[in-house]
Length: 410
Ligand SMILES: *Cc1c(COP(=O)(O)O)cnc(C)c1O
Image (cartoon, rainbow, N blue to C red; front, side, top):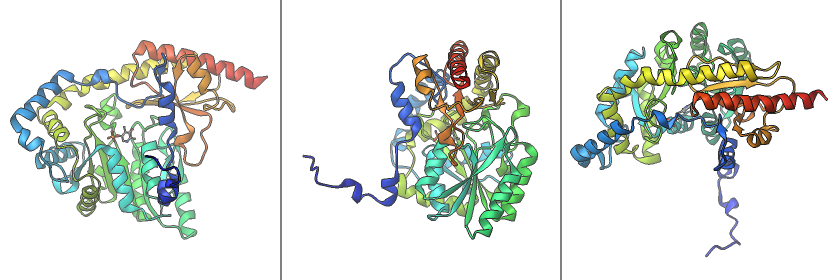
């Protein structure tokens, strides 16, 4: 029986009380079963999941290694998987990656949560991009970080703005702990951090004695070889906590991702993880290990890159054709997202209902901006729909935006 006299809210911690549903989840609930072209969902296309191969691997893993794969496992992850990930990371230029630096996590989301809690005392400052990833913002928020936004342009984080804000915070006696960045094909903007800025960012981390949290789930989804810059962790591993994931290159339902950090920090991540879940799903990890070891992941990458590049191009072409006058948008060289900046004072949240009624969904940009700016931006994902539907979705959006622009002009 439910006793309504109990004030549950008062029993919660300060943080527990402060937790609120995020806007994207609310939007997903709203989408429900309506027949809408979704440029909202930031997920890989389920068409890309290698179902037959994974079915075969899963059956084999349970039949031949079931007594291992269905038992409790080591917190850090099975040794062969950790070794496989370290080898993969050395291939990415992170030359120092060894098993003692790697911890497997239940998605990068868990990595973000654990790392935030390890670095942040309430009120410590974390520098984040404007805009930044909601999952990272939630993790830092739950660790009670104070987040300070740094401006971005088409070359990513603006170094001068970062330097100025850091100097100001230092002067005000604030304790700045880290910079959280998604340097490649950022979620939500699609922007990539320019090569020369990577060096400068490392210099700043050295100068101000900060750690960099590098969130890089789209590394392997660069459309071309030339579009794949070196991770920050390759430049200065001592300053970087690197997070990667199998979600975007295999399947996010297998909750398998990894943190690569200086050994001392990796050991702390392992201890924090033990308290969170003892270990990630051993079965998921055994499946991922087989996918990695058999070359399945590597083999599919060219096809995956092309899959998303074709969709990105369809969206860019449709924007050129249908966007209203004065709109601007980013031009990703990998990943899933384009950020559209609307002309004038059109508010992307205000016209969302109209867009849904017209049969197209997107995510308003504002929740991604920690300083409350970005009301005239929206995130468009080209990852889930077919090229034809993307074209039609942008055309529908274009009509809504043109209507909003006419209404604004009146
Ligand atoms: C998708 C994504 C991740 C990966 O999340 P998982 O928890 O590994 O599924 C991490 N960071 C960003 C910026 C993402 O877009």
